[in-house]
Length: 316
Length: 316
Image (cartoon, rainbow over all chains, first blue to last red; front, side, top):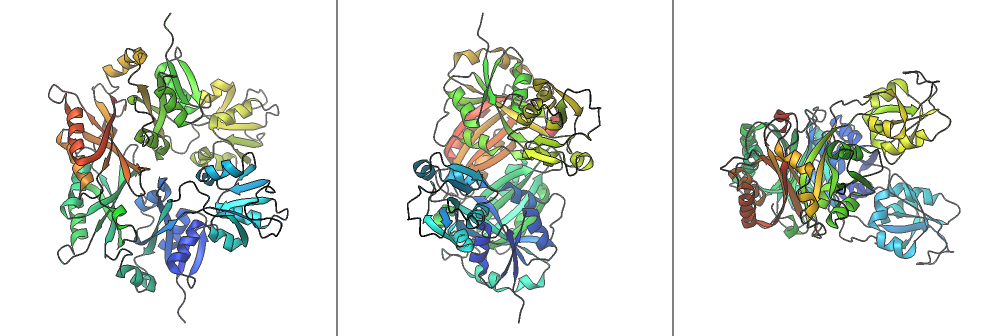
């Protein structure tokens, strides 16, 4: 029997990254948690994993800079990595306790202490203000860690704020669901693979994802990083014009310190294109054009657009 | 006698922001710490302070997103605020202890516990690895808070990693200086004022800063925010081309979630221009041009460039 594909994600188990990995690769894949973004990148570069699934952007908080800095790859540690897919995950928080008959739904009186990641307190402000004013709060390193602590607490007087996925993983009851203030909070994950690996070339995952996007088009996204000559006037405008000239609509632009010199930046630009017979060479033409006006540039991948709300993914 | 100008900064006292405020406004100004970025913005908007000095970017870590999100101002809370200056502060860390004759320079043996902000551990990795392997580390909310704790510790077996400025403020001895790995780490602060306030119009601070930059030119920086129509092809490239057309070189570009709709962004673009008789109207012409191609745009200020290394502040 063929070995299952091995996917690495940002741990601990039952994290949002874990959930994204399950939703993308299904239960037959071997899912391996890593403790840091860099560990996950290294695992794919060194072929200890076939894929990594990494959060890159949240609809409320913006870009995940650790991911951008690894993609920018100033020391060429991850030269064989390319983005080959993406996944959108809706972020919902629940109030979780140990399975217990003592506690009715909505009966929060007996809960003496809450656990969650510091960011989640702020995301559930209204709910906490209404039902848990003055109740002790304990910061933990992840929402799923909080769920784990509560699952082992014999007092049954604690609760965690974490996902339904974490509740199922740690065997906890859901006392209240979707307790977040902003119901439209979504995280986008990128899927990375090693371009030199044979195993990923023909995998079922990419065949499925490549065929069609959820909105019925075959729209493709492309990610390119570049640095511009600092002494050239309008260098960034010139670089972005090349995308426009070749019909690629930009969907995001990020600048990060290059780590080469203070106040010198690397740009990560993402755009999309609906493939036709006339634009088949667009990505390589853009790269050719960028080579003329930039100090350096790199193609970081082209993959099928997965955003369901077609109109929300419009050009910038 | 005239009332001193009142400047608000991100506290606690003896923070890097406090140091930036002292270096910019001198000791005659009344300096008032605030606990959050939003508090500092609100203090200036409501004229409870004449100026705010706010970190916006670090040469190693990149943009300070809280500052960008407040400048983007999606709910129009800070309509009277404009950037009127900037200040570059070199970030150096020191090892600090209570004044004590028992401890020689470089004699770190008796220190049993270290205090600092989580980010500073990573910035002093080499030093800590060499001299403090295995010594207990206590996270605190700021480097200056760590210095305060050590200043009150009677055991004299603790040390803090914080700035020379914090050592002076809390009366601590400096056991080792410049213990950071990256010696070129610099934070840029923006100075904000209320455009409707009379007191700041004629203040001495702006007269000095407006006259000349450290590199001897009169280069001016301008910050503009805008949102583009999402359904228009190449909208961002078109907007950036307007800056180029009017001779403004871009020095930074940031995109942040607009908070209006998921995956819709607000762009914060900064550029510079050396004023001449021919380009006196450039900023207003750029704004006129942007109004034609963007959904909304706002001039967030024009001020004298303070970057000493002229060549490092080149165009992008």
